[in-house]
Image 1: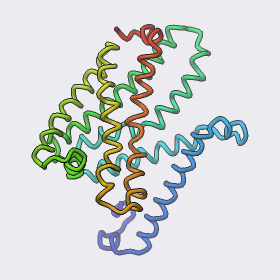
Image 2 (image 1 turned 90 degrees about the vertical axis):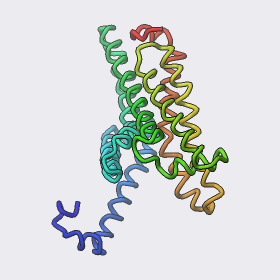
Image 3 (image 1 turned 180 degrees about the horizontal axis):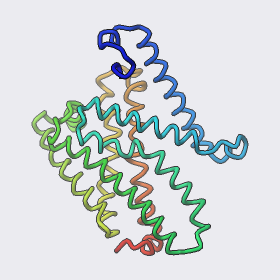
Image 4 (image 1 turned 60 degrees about the horizontal axis):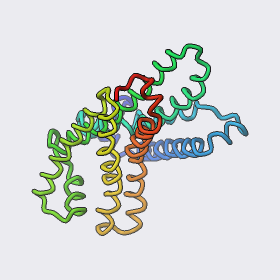
Length: 261
């Protein structure tokens, strides 16, 4: 960024104007994401009253995409981090495409076209979910350096030593790989089995931020730093739950989509 804006590195890190620009840019993006969240929450009412459509949501998605790229760069272009952020970045797109399909599918005259489009959508959701857990697994098994907070949360949550925590993470990483593989296979039973691991593990790893840091940091830090971390990881829980619902309760439609039992 410094080179693109024609700043030397020293000017970039010492300039107060650059610091103010970065802070205000962050606040602006944060405001856009906050308003997008409100738009999603009150979607129907806002569309009917103000005529607000999908443009702000698409803009917010590109903000998340930019953030994904910058976080990936900050983690030395590690493949694991690129994959681990898949659901967090794509959650808006998943929701937006679901709305599109809900509106467009009833208008398709060709039933086969409905099947193909819906099948492609849910395959994409499964692929993004699998990518997220492969990314987590790459860190847990030590392909990339195991993050210190992974080890600390395991120690704090289970009351074990560092070596035991690393061994548990190694096993969990391989279970993540197995679940990701089962999720992309074409059989419904294998996908449900994968989700039986993915959903509880996503809940535990998200809530572990509060559980593990609850006794280590002041309460205000827990609310301002770690509670948002839990919220940010909600797509890791909600998207697999939606997928589980689709597979379990919408079985006739799933079979019609060509997913094998």
